[in-house]
Length: 64
Image 1 (tube, rainbow, N blue to C red):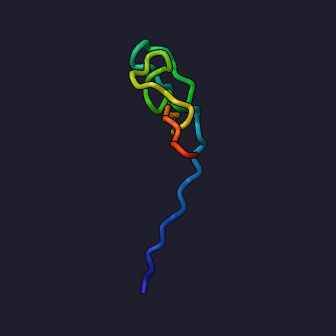
Image 2: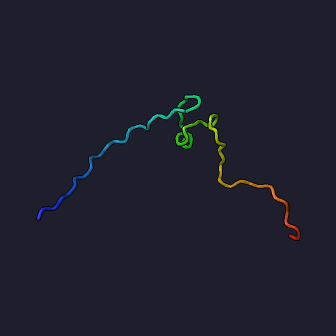
């Protein structure tokens, strides 16, 4: 009975990263988040926040 075996994939040298350009101003993007979004920080239509948590002003609870 013959068995089917796959050959190992050849080792491929990883080259430099693909260049990504800003959709707004056409500058090259180097920041990881900018590369994923496709916009530089100045051109990004959505505001960027350092964390997912936002501080919301609230009145104090009476009695505490």
